[in-house]
Length: 158
Image 1 (tube, rainbow, N blue to C red):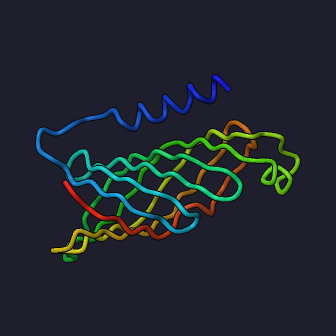
Image 2 (image 1 turned 90 degrees about the vertical axis):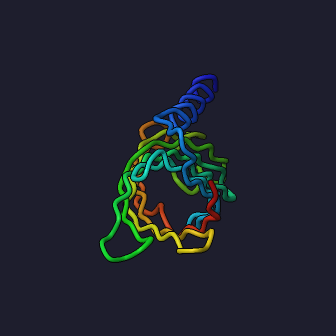
């Protein structure tokens, strides 16, 4: 359990660290659908963002940190695509273990990728994104998960 808490603290610290700008950068908070998550994104500069996702469901929770490179799409104001990677850890209950035999693990630690589109609505404090977030669990129930990702709606602020 101490290793799990230490790993969680390292993931959060790595997410919070990084280059900081002297001018305020765009931040956003919102919800993501499938699976359900709370999402927080902060731009480090005009093309780099950090995103933290907290997924909750009846089986437990998963916390994911992503580092994303955003690239504008020409002639499409507010629309950009992004790619990146990061890591996750999760804690699961006995119901999850029963549906995923032969696993006896109650936690998972792994790596994630992300590929998506992000649209900041001009003159409105809203951003919408759609992405795919494949992941691989390295510790716990070791396996590839290709079904993470989805539609996010965020309120933006500086």
